[in-house]
Length: 181
Image (cartoon, rainbow, N blue to C red; front, top):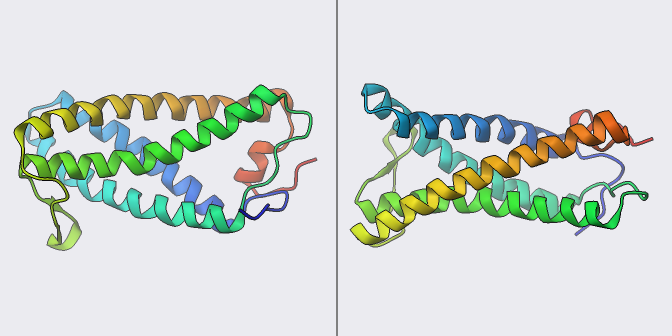
């Protein structure tokens, strides 16, 4: 992986912030889907499926850009445990951002449900039809959504810590692309 300069590129920032908004929206849509049995459930489901696939495509692009462009170095005075935590949390976020839509798609395939994108495009099933597999994947999707939510909150807390307590430019490198001071 190439080492980036002192800030993330405009493309990296655009991918980060657009995905952040979509992921938070998806988490709330998912909660809304399981909390209602009204007609709203169907509308939320019709939104959740294509957005999940869009997020999968975006995270794959984002991962490629990250591997090519790299990331700015963390501040040199950051304790080793925080440095390790930052790397571990980013790995967890990428793993979850890839796993969640794939598990959702697999779950729907196992349940015999189509994944319909905008414009009526149907994705092929990626798992065999199985009620047992559907049940297991649905549970995994739910639990991993909670893990993703907790990881996003931890990521947000770390960003605020860097911005408000350390004031080391870590957040600014993703927010505005400014060089760290």
